Length: 248
Image (tube, rainbow, N blue to C red; front, side, top):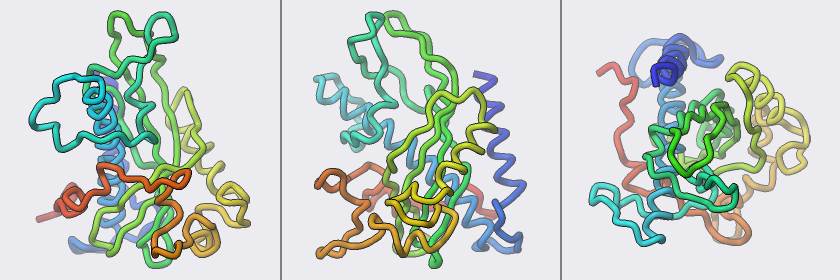
């Protein structure tokens, strides 16, 4: 646990020490501070979605759900794998009996914004440190990386997040995964076969997933024809005050 706390603390200090290419300015609502808040809120959204998935699977299995968790009952399938463990026979799938905040630590490595900053592609690195539990296979401690699309209606709002395809799994350390994850998402043809990578704002104007359908909704909001509805995208969640790094 001490190692995980040190890892998370190091990530937080790295946020406070730089803005990923964003200029340092003064004032609460600066570009730099918004960037850091975006990193923190997207990481929290990811964690909340994995916990929502865990609670949803327990509910479907007939387990008793604590009252303070009942508003999280959902089943966002794109996040379900984080909450599933394997039995000792490697066949039985077991829903994690532990809260996801004690099992994984998501950290936003980089955010690539559209020109108006209302869309983004965020690269997330997840530190996996699952507890050893009787009857469940011990998981290797490691790092997994993936991308999510973010969308919001104003720059002062939290991003709604939607998982992207492509996961880099079981890396031994954060630094090498960070380099490989950025290389994967910034190369040409990775995203909808466009000639732009995630680091080029033109990706948000050319990739199919960022187009809207006849109902005015983005294609990234759908998965195999069904609209994605994740816990972190609900109005109650989006309206929560963002004050992780606020100076007041």
